[in-house]
Image (cartoon, rainbow, N blue to C red; front, top):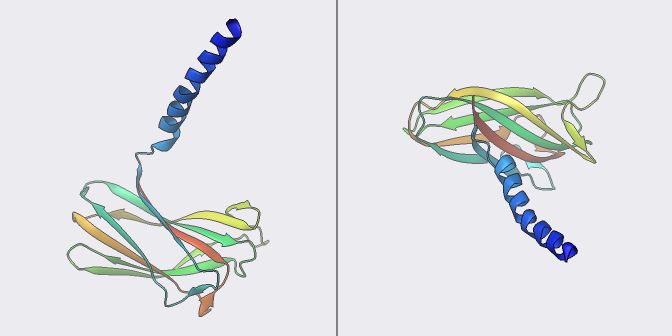
Length: 162
């Protein structure tokens, strides 16, 4: 009889533990936006734009915008350059050109987190205050000399409240 009772308690505790784990890990109120774009296996053409659309009503807070990058450990460079264009709700456009992010130390060691053949890094792009309510669009292109850049797998825009 004790065995069945213990088994019943374990069966009831499992959903409770799962719900608690989801509550503790699933909510990060500081993250305002996160979206990942996958890069085709044949490379990232310099004319291919990655478009991220986000909408906000918060014009009071300051946010940190990051570019999350997943590259192969066979990526041929120690850095990467991006051009980022921001389109505001009222149609205004701002451009940041040749944003450079260092991906590897001078000794060749990757600065991001390595896992198998992948390297994941988060790179701060800017502090941003959304001056208008509405839809913003961030357009990201690589600005490397290669017409088709090899070794980049995913690019994400990550925005969180500061």
